[in-house]
Length: 146
Image 1 (cartoon, rainbow, N blue to C red):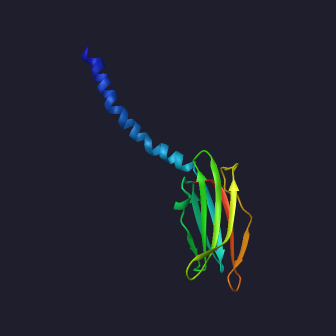
Image 2: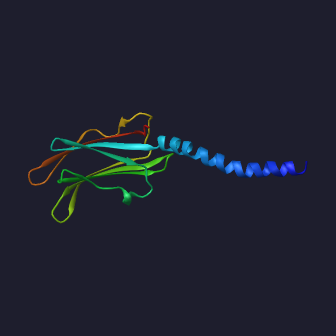
Image 3: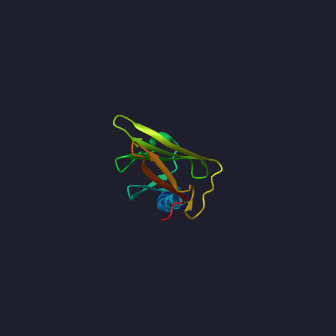
């Protein structure tokens, strides 16, 4: 009878990690489903691109998106899965040597994240360049939908 408790301990020691590993994908799916998502519709010359951004701790890793070879657009969302510290949106006119910043918008705490995607910004119209080319964007914020 003394060996039975050791057998139970051994069985728990073997089964517990397996059960924890089995539950990990479900926990990850729930966590990723509850992540904030910023979706920006960026339009230039009649063509719209969707730029999606997730929460990050480093603003410098956010990609810069080419918009029609004329503009660049960058969206940064800083914080963690519980709280957003700020959102910054950048637009640049692409030049021969460097991109020229033409617009920067900042949204600070408190930033409310609803379950459904809701407009964070109005439709913004930006004009730049020698012939005043137009870039439009509007961003929506909500929880990532699976």
